[in-house]
Image (cartoon, rainbow, N blue to C red; front, side, top):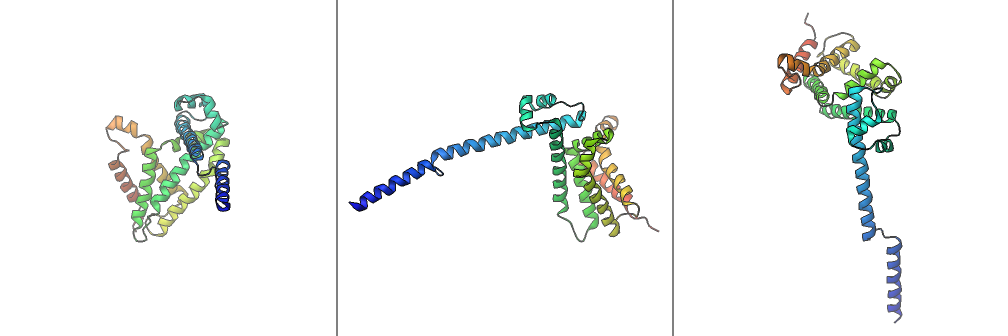
Length: 239
C-alpha cells in the first residue's frame, strides 16, 4: 500500500541518516570512548612530565637541567617530552605556573573562610596555609631562589607573571592587619619579608634541624607553635 511504501522509504532514509551521521550509534560511541581515552592518556603523560620537571628544576636549576634528565625522571622518552613541550624554557614556565597556581588556589580557598569578627584567627589561617603548602611543595621556593641567584630573563618572567602580584598582595595583607590593630606598625615591605622568612626558612632547614636536634620543624605541632610565636612577635607594642 501507499502508506506502507512511504513507511519503508522513511525507515530507509532514517537508516541512511544513522549511517551518515552516527551520533548515537555504537560506532560513534566507541570512537568517542577511544578519543577520550587518548586524551586522558595524553593529559596523564603531560602531568607525569610536569611532576618530573618540577622536581629536577627545583633540585638542579634551569641551566643544569636537561630534557633528557627530565624524561628519565618521568620514565618516558625524550621525544615524548618534546611532543608536549617544544623547548626547555616552555617546560620550565609550565612547571613554575603550576606551582604558583596551586599555591594561590590553596591560599584563596583557606582565606575564603575569612571571619569578620576574629582577625587573629584569619592571620593564623593564612600563615598556616602557606606553611603547610610549602611543607608539601618546597619546590616553588627553590624555583625562586635559583632564578634570584641567576638574575636573568627567567627571574623577570617570574616577576611579571607572579612575584609582583605576590608582593602587592603580601603588603596588602600586612596593612590590613595593621589597620585592624593586630600587627605592629612598621614598613609593610620589611614586615612582609620578615614574615616570609619566618614561614619558609624553618622548613628549608627542617631536615638539618631534625638531624642535629631531633626536633621536626615540619611537623604539625611545630608549625602550630611557630605560628603562635610569630603572631606574638608581630603583635602591636604596648605603650
